[in-house]
Image (cartoon, rainbow, N blue to C red; front, side, top):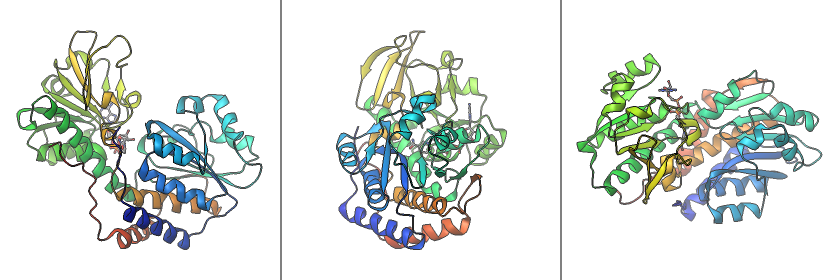
Length: 388
Ligand SMILES: NC(=O)c1ccc[n+]([C@@H]2O[C@H](COP(=O)([O-])OP(=O)(O)OC[C@H]3O[C@@H](n4cnc5c(N)ncnc54)[C@H](O)[C@@H]3O)[C@@H](O)[C@H]2O)c1
């Protein structure tokens, strides 16, 4: 995986921002923080800062996004919990986490992807109710928490305006990865039909970016309101089966198995398939599992023959396409980190009600104002050089 290393100037600015956030809303120093994170350089700036402010930091690295050097650095100042989301969903997962915790002090979980959604109550009972609450960062994760009644304070920033800049850039980097994958085989978007499945925050950004590059972009979303919105934005919204047959390239950005096993027979031979999220969330079929025969690996794609003998090119092997470039979104990530830090501080204040909530608009505006002051004169685009 390519990694994006923030400049030392931006690292300094990020620390300045985090200090400003904590000046405005300090955290209890005896707290333990459990943080699910990408083990990547821009996250390392945040985790190092957290380690300096919390008594104990436990990191749960997301397995698909580990940079060895970043993980090594993280292990120098935090406890690394080597459990994946599947293990955390089993009863033993929370026991394993509880064994890493100190015997006293409040605990906050900063989750990314709903890793703890099924286990918070179990963990709370193992630690005498010391779990002060949870902050969730992703849309997928929020959905997991919404799956059952929430009996603890939960702040989600996944759907808040403060996340929108990150989502736009993620969409643009996914589009960038698609262009790079096409370029590898001598194709240009101007010659191709593209289908974007899911017209949410990410899908909208992908569709707009690919259309700007000259592709004929169609959109499918299960929600008729989103289809109407896509039409208003100038995209065709054919029926899914027709759109699948027509597309040379499909980007799925639903987080809810936008491409199912039933969809596969409709795909063109040679179709390029890209995901906005982890393959088990985005694809309702097993790829590269033995029934698919890998025929080629390139810098951007794994090409495989499916059971029907067609070749499908999976951008980044079916994993989130933007992670071809390390998942970096430039300084925008520090705005998200600032929101997480502020949410943690709110949870530790003990003044957050039980149940799911977002940060208030005024809080998001204040944090965005701090971010703008600090990063005002930075060039914000992480879009990788070349590849067009
Ligand atoms: N790769 C990254 O760095 C990154 C960053 C942010 C979010 N994500 C992930 O990308 C995915 C999309 O995020 P978002 O913020 O755009 O979500 P969103 O909820 O805003 O949009 C998802 C859209 O998909 C539609 N949809 C759901 N199931 C569908 C189906 N089966 N077929 C067609 N449409 C369907 C919904 O109606 C919605 O419009 C999520 O899984 C999210 O976690 C990835």
